[in-house]
Length: 271
Ligand code: BGO
View: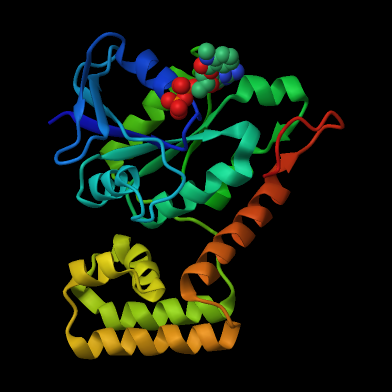
């Protein structure tokens, strides 16, 4: 069986440029079933046994737009063997928001730190080893525009797919939120696979109807989760979805502080 790679990232992070570099003219363009969202798939020119799916550019995996739904369903339903998450390295803070969500899905992930040519030009430096350690997945520097880093990226992605290594992120939330998450995980029990446990616990804690419906929980379990959510919301005086968004940005802020050194020219955006 060949390897299936998904390319995921924010709009404008360089996905189309990278997809074209990887697939050349071996591309098929259509629509995702039932929606007018473009689906692009292709065979890798460097290794014909690899299929690459270019997912729509999204900022998050919330189910608020057809693009987000297509992306999350494809990743959740076991489509790819590995996700290459392209990140615009000049805009790390914003781009890592999607990354933290992709990591929660438990699939093998490789982060492509794209636009590194622009980061170098600005004089900023990114500690890639530290970033990889904090994200718990391989990170490869690329410049899709210049075709830089593509061989290494592909080799690392193929290895992650073959070894089926799930990410081990080190991005802890506030203790009260972690505690609520582990309580929700206990309620969900063995209904979710261990590597997807954090994703489902987060979505259930947020009270996301789409996920709660898909999990088909008995009424008693839904009520138990609602009580955990309410206790957390009262304690932190905010709604669960905003609490978790805030926790993600806090965790990302710590990672960026630890990994990015800005030059006096300061061209790498912080937002
Ligand atoms: C224009 N480095 C640099 N410097 N630029 C890159 C890199 C990289 O590694 N990767 C991509 N780009 P898409 P999505 C453009 O189109 O692949 C550039 O949305 C322009 N166009 O060339 O489209 C890439 O698919 C006029 O830039 O991203 C593109 O993810 C002036 O980033 C842009 C300047 O790439 C988005 C740039 C008419």
